[in-house]
Length: 110
Image (cartoon, rainbow, N blue to C red; front, side, top):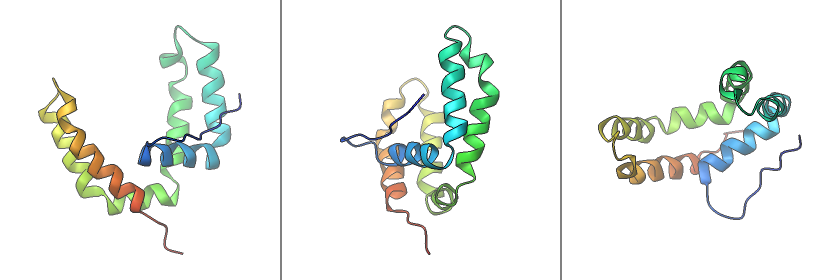
């Protein structure tokens, strides 16, 4: 399965996360994709271990660690908003936008 992760629209931090995953965790992402495709009815259960492997790989990347550090405050505010607005998570769009703006500004210091 070949996954091309490019889009012309927005997406910001989520797009960046997908690109990081595709670039640095390609084998984990491909294994997970094959598992999902092979198990349409039970992929959530059958592919859980592979999803965790892909997540661990992406989380270990320095840019993700930098985003967690630099954007901890807006992310915490977003999580708190979700807890308080479980019935209408759309109330948290300002919080998610603030986090994505922060994530987009993060650069690895070289």
